[in-house]
Amino acid sequence: MTQSADIVIIGSGMGGATIASALAPSGRRIVILERGEALADTPAARDDIAIFRDGVFRPEETWLDGNNRPFNPGNYYVVGGNSKFYGAVLLRYRAEDFQEMQHLEGVSPAWPMSYEDLEPWYQKAEELFEVSGDASQDPSEPQHSGSYPHAPIADEASISDVRRYLKRAGVTPSSLPLGIDVDAWSNRAATPWDAYPDTTGAKHDAQTISLTKAMQSANVTLETGCLVQGLETGQDGRISKVIFVQGGVAKSVAPQQVILAAGAVNTAALLLKSANENHPTGLANRSDMVGRNFMNHNCTAVMAIHPFRRNTSIYQKTLQFNDFYLSGGPQDAPLGNVQLLGKISGNILAAQSGLPLWMANQIARHSVDWYVMSEDLPQFDSRVTVTKGQIKLDWKRTNWRTHEALVKRAKTVFRKAGYPLVLSRAFDRRTPSHQCGTARFGVDPMQSVLDLHCRAHDHPNLYVMDASFLPTSAAVNPALTIAAQALRVGDHINQERKAA
Image (cartoon, rainbow, N blue to C red; front, side, top):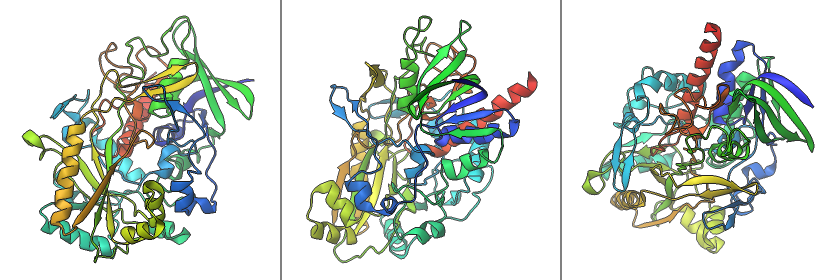
């Protein structure tokens, strides 16, 4: 069965759903193909044991690492994509992230556009996602052309104390910009939201915000349970057909334009799997850059523990500090971002550490839990490939000295803030930490996959609109940057069509 559409969007995550919301008013027939289904509001959605020990939401999928060892990736296939599980942090990249930056172990290259070019779209994205924040609190925050739609989410009582302790320790804590309705979230159950699936619309995620807005237009259709198998091209290089399986039935759709938004790993894999006689190394791959420059933030969980300070917070995740973002490392090198995690429970700690539950509960009651994040630099041989239909992710982690220096600085701060015991554990490849970079955008078709509006250099009707386009990972959560670029690209497509 073949049908037609003006625009086919593959994936309903932050990039796909947000560009759908930008394109919906055009009146063109838009079909969104989503591999997963909408999350059901089951008891497991707020059960820390089900989520963190039993992994009930993890995919039944195996990838290979760089040594051909199988592992289970933590990417989610649901309507709204990984944003359904995100911590609702909607930070802008710092202005300096768009410029070349020297790190301890290499250079983070300059973007092909400036912060000022993207700033108006950051502002629109913050308004779309109804972000709560206060840009004046953080000295590293770049210039804003407007204000956040809402005031910052209030610290819980224990976290208000932490804010004071951090100030006394000599750093500048600031409120995380968040997309969350705390009351609506708490009405369902008293749990954190970080890494918990949103089944009630309380998080301002890709489904709740972007997709809901797009689906208000009758010309937009969402098809779930659609596993895209490949893209076909005509002699002119245009994408002529999207082939997928839905409910065990092979189907296809003939589009005027295709927007690929399956996530940095799956987007690259699909382009490579779609190789044909005219494009033997994969689609959009004249430069041999598809799948290369894979990046995944260097991240460590840190628990600051005080035996006599009880942490009574439920969600915890309202603070960050960026004092070491642009400097503070060896040779005064940039280090990265430190932000609160969602509260780690005894069940989570026991599942992740193997500690007896009674001990894990005691530690969790007296810990403040942090997410320490540093930039992973682009590297040509850090890449996604496909072998006999199976995804191979050969992630070559970079800039680890920087990350170790940031963890060390953060621990020193926490000890100065009065926490005598500070424990840490790095994240591994089983936990996606903002995967990006596999189809970078740029001016030179031999050094990039996409142009500055995320159109493939090799295919005039193919766009990529997810974290694949990012030329650098920076050291903050990328969700808002993806959304801002999606609004920018969507506007460009609409304007180009009007001018035609």
